[in-house]
Length: 87
Image (cartoon, rainbow, N blue to C red; front, side, top):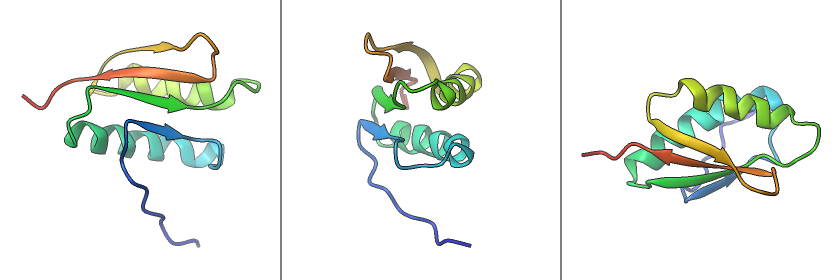
């Protein structure tokens, strides 16, 4: 078993280096931490490919309680997410 890797929480996250099986938990935790840091808008970079990571990301965003809305960027390689504020 590999040790968890701590990532800095910024206004975007690039999922290219992660396995599809790790995406769900990673995105959930990222959204939680980004909202705690006060980010209102974040970008999740999932790549274009055949859409596996994009579908995983969108399925999480559709039911995540901190997400107000989301939309694909024009290149279809990332998704912009609007988070609820902490107020």
